[in-house]
Image 1 (cartoon, rainbow over the protein chains, first blue to last red):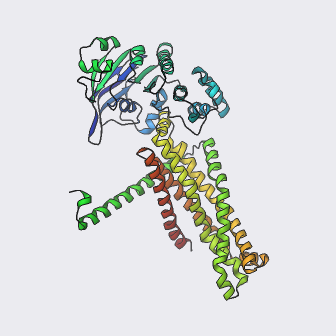
Image 2: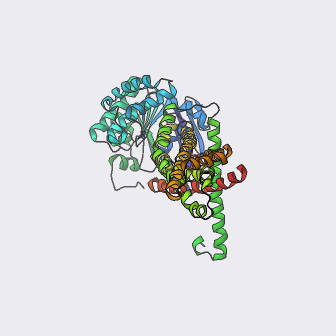
Length: 248
Length: 264
């Protein structure tokens, strides 16, 4: 079971965002995609569940090519590959419990009461049960993110894509989210792809890291490889230096 | 040379072409959305909770504004007819005149325009906000079809509720006309109702109700289409609401012309 990107290319109009991007993510891995803002990290992971389509190249999930599937065919992929968006994207018109219950009602064919009961249990795992009846706009970013994670995990996916899960969170909430992602990999065996530029997250929980730069994979390796590399662009990024060869 | 600096003989056809392309693109979008909605009807897999929520939000909550509009529509019909009624001493046909104009034309038209302003605009804003905040993408990521889950219940709710609101509005408008007839022209309510029931036939009522279904479908399609095609953040939502209301109103008048022609 793995995820494989092969020579993926994507352009928006005349602006080429991804060019010849390729790498493989192993089962149960906590894999980070890093790079400067606007380099195409979020764009890349959205291809995996068909929210965007590549202009060239192929994407494989469990050995099956998913880059040519239709919208309808992607539904089965999305049930096993969940995504937590950068801005939580909870439905404002529903309570937290209703947000979590929605995929349960739709896919596990649970009745409204049974779905809400299971939603409360799911919210308990992210310590949000007491806010079950709150509406998302009433909650802070960190709380919304935890509810979004609970919602993404309702269908027990084998793969989870996290798009900047710790951005805009306070340090304590950020580390809790890191811990949750790591536990998913270690205890449940979920394969996680995390888009981030939070250095503490990257070097705290990543098994392997892929750095994108100017539409290409600049470096692929373990956190130790990144810390010891001579590549000046990688060094500038991981040390957060303003001066250097990196073009943003 | 940019479009702005073109001499006017070149600018005019360029502008015409761009406008034609834009209208063609929107009409094409509406047709595609309609086809996608129809495809979800076979077999119908409606989310009951979402349908009930929309029926209540779009129908029940529109009742006060529709009732007030209808009350005054009926009264206005009598005010406009008053000089002729007095001149030709035609008090015995005031009920028929007010009923004919209200049931066939003015009632469904004005109630649809109010419905478009209240429900259609709100629907475009809600769907547009869901697009710009990635909530539609989140639905897709949860393997939930946004057309089946969000759009279909809204379209059905708008069509069904505008139909029932038009029936209620017709009754209230006739009531308003009857009161105005008594106050302004001293028309006895029994005489008003006699002329209404004797001179109007079922087809007069049906014409207005068929129109309400057509207008409801028009408002539903335009509001969902413009909401789902929002780009450009919050300003884009504002532009979409504006475009949706204008397109729905234009569509209502155009369809009213053709349906009046076809329905007789």
